[in-house]
Figure 1 (cartoon, rainbow, N blue to C red):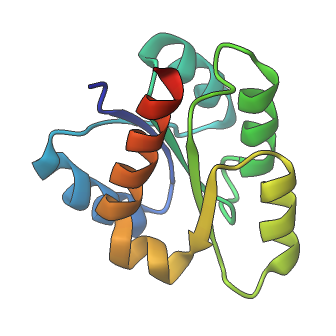
Figure 2: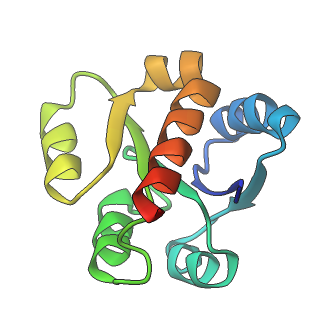
Figure 3: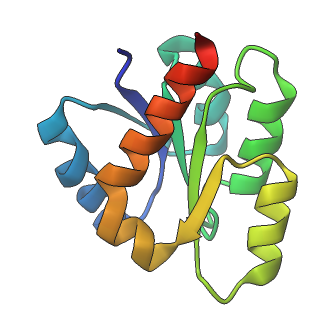
Length: 128
């Protein structure tokens, strides 16, 4: 099973939490540090999942969703996003753009590995 995850999270604290939650289970992380990394690293790395911080100021998560969902090569890759729970417009816009799952920042922090496992399993089932 492909365990590569494209992580578009530039907040060092959250990236470290993701890394610490996923590396022990054999996941391989590819970090997207800038907008152009989304398409480049998706093309070259064939990730099983993309993680997006909808509140990130460095990587425009909305543009990343548009880019991924518009390209037939990448449209089936599950996308897990998180946002501040009170930002209803952000949640609705992410859903409209095709995010697979969006959760609150707190839920993401508390359940990172479980959420990733769930969506990677979903992605694998969707490809069979």
